[in-house]
Length: 437
Image 1 (tube, one colour):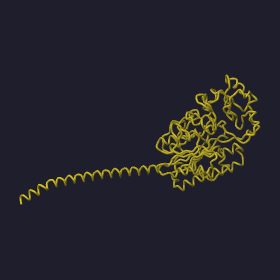
Image 2 (cartoon, rainbow, N blue to C red):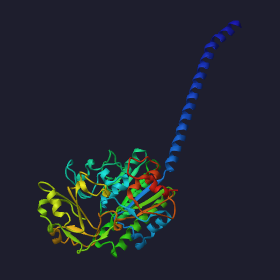
Image 3 (cartoon, rainbow, N blue to C red):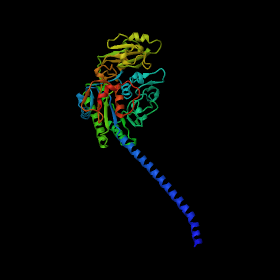
């Protein structure tokens, strides 16, 4: 019996050790699994929290109606735009930067900078340090990133972990400060307004993790009517109806996506419009030989360089020759324009009075220069150049009308709505502090 017992014990010893080792291994595996499950759970919890935080982020849709003068809202009474104005914050007027042209003002709105600092000093310009002539139609030159200074809002947003999507905003399809929006479209003026809105809604249908929080869309119909027919034309009513329908389509689409509680609409225009008349024409040939000058920009802001020699004879030939044309050397431009001595300005600058048109005899002889309709680019202090500002949505107060303000303050405001840190800019947060809830 003792033998059996000893044999049993002899066998039992190793088995017991093996069982204990197996138990320890099982315990370790169980602990590892538990830690893994715990870590996985924590990861899931964190991911869910991030999703909730992302889902709670405000959305800003910045809408530009090119050339919408400040008084069109009351005159034309577009239903959707009027409803947004009544339900949010509306400025009496939005004051553009000088010159009151499309590219400088669109870019000032999204950078908060005056043109002297962001570099887009006109729709057409030259820079002695850069090749080519910058213009609205010269895509090749526009793609040179050295023209574009500052940090536009889509770059600010992308650098701070959010996603931007731009539909035809000047500069948004170029690489600026090393970045582009995640989603963007090359400008195509023939694309219908409804298709522009549908592209925006397509971007908003992205899954939460890739859905943009800052979006832009641009409408040009009102500007075209203003140029062709003037700011008092009956054709403006149809243009306003078309743009209003597009914005209504956008609002309805956002509601269908269940995003109304997060969506903030900010509607702006870059400038207004002044009426032209053949009776208000300044013909350069009356004062100098136009073959001796390079006309960089012509109306209503004249920019000329001599083809040879000094600019002084050009300046003297134009200065004080017409009461509606104010002529300056580049480094003597009035300080209120905030562009004095900028290297991208021509050496001689002329500023026409409101509603006056600068041209040449050759242009007058062509059918495309009828000197009718309307124009912009004039001194921003002229009421005819003032534009539109409306902001409506969950972050904005309701039924508020604010005094006129400069468009450089919009960038800071949108940064606050989107909860991103603004880049250095010329805006003052105090100007728009009362706009938010």
